[in-house]
Length: 408
View (tube, rainbow, N blue to C red):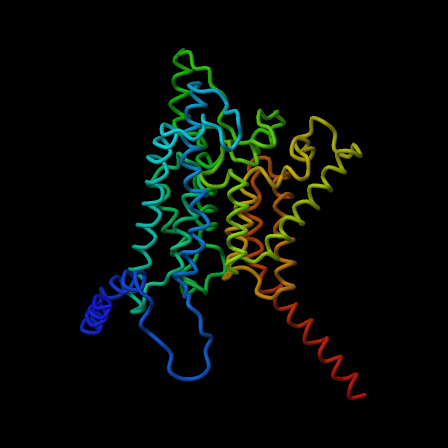
């Protein structure tokens, strides 16, 4: 208690200093904010924005740790040094210190760059505008390294973070004012600015470039392709993974988006803590299943002939779309962003359904980039206010009709 009082006194004595927002960010991260309201009626709760953000981070930590093990596992598998794990999620071939060591040294730098660059920009804008450092980047800083390929160059990630924070958030007024999800804005910038680093078979597996150089040099490397399942299906190739591999996450992909099992547990945690919207999650799944069923029906009716560039993903079992790519991760951790998602209950159902529906549509019709959830969420971020507007106007019209009926 004494330390808290001393720090508060230090803030008061230096309240005119330019660097105070940087100190306040650390102070309020360790302790509850000292600012309290004195007038009017206010909701009394034990949490604040930082605690809410930290809860979301806790839901993502299992995906982060799993991603480190998977990065090492995919690395050694690509070099032919180990065989595909048997035993599923509890396989002893997967949970090894060697796998973790490779993943740790590849993933942690991504996390550090994301937080250091992003928070530095937040502090600079706080100093410039003379306000407290906003907490919104706490979640964004964790999301970014989880949705990029493992071998993304650090300088490239830093440039993308600068763009995403400045253009995607600060120009709109900061946390709570942005219309696009900042993490997805960063991911979109990477995709459009550096497309060769966001697709193919050399970016999802640590050291894949070195592996190909060894093969080109004539060295005997009995390795498997490092391409994602979506990438293979988009090119009409068969995949060497069964459904349980997809569900557990023993597949190539972005750092934190492969394990549907852990993402599902994170979703339940967010729903239990009342931070994530179950309406958006459920409606997104329904939308994806509906679109998947439509495509399966077209293939069954021979509307799309085998050999077509769309055939591979169209013929994929409709429910398999929930297990591959970034659909599950995007639905749970980014579509539910309370700032950029719809606010009304009916709007959440519409918003989520369209995200799922459009995700699978884009995934199938864009073979150059078969992952559609990012573009679907960004598109619906833009339309979320419009959806809420018409939902509210619809409710107003219903009430007006009831009033007129009573008056009559």
